[in-house]
Structure formats: structure tokens, C-alpha cells
Length: 118
Image (cartoon, rainbow, N blue to C red; front, side, top):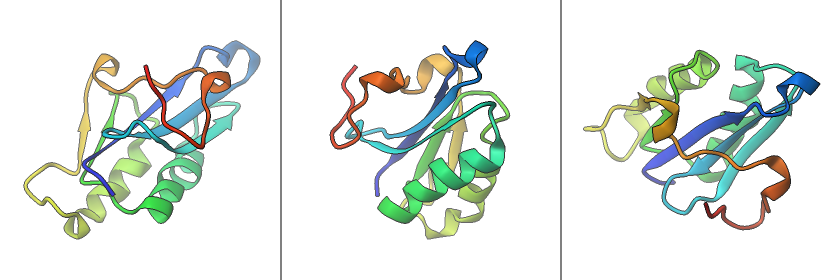
């Protein structure tokens, strides 16, 4: 689909057993995948966020996440599919400090039919 897929989590309600993970297209800021879960789970993040976004919109050239371990399965699959991307010169994913990843809004502020504006 595009150049960069930003994936991040919102843990403001973790004390109530709610963690929300979203995937946002880096260019349009459109929410392309999301899931709410009681605790961060690699398999749920892969299936409900990354995989559903790729099946719906196509493969991004690069995935940007923070330095946590909750996205390792998605990063592994992104790397395995690297030969199918448009731009082979870029790394398939980048792990950066969370300040460099497009932050996700609170779940209640998102309209999933449009784009997210900061």
C-alpha cells in the first residue's frame, strides 16, 4: 500500500485490563488495523492488527514500531515478506524510540472511516 506502517499501543487503561493497539498508515494517517486486548499479546497483535491490515491494504515497504517486544511476530513476518515489497533498498522494519512512532489516539477519539489528525 504505502511506504511506512506505524504500529503502537495505548496503555492508558492498562490498570483496568485494557490495552489498545493500532496500525496507522504513515502518509495518510488512516487507521488500517486495531485491536483491544486485556494484555499485550504477540499473536493477537499479528492476527488482528498487522495481518488484517496487510490483507486489506497490501504490504507496506517499512514497518515502524517502538523498541518493545510486543511486535516481534509482526516484524518477523514483515521481514519474511521483504522480497514482495516495492522498495528493496529500505529495511523491512525500523524499531525506534516511541517518540518517533506516530502516536495513537485514545480509542474514543478515533473515527475508523476517516484519517486521524494529531
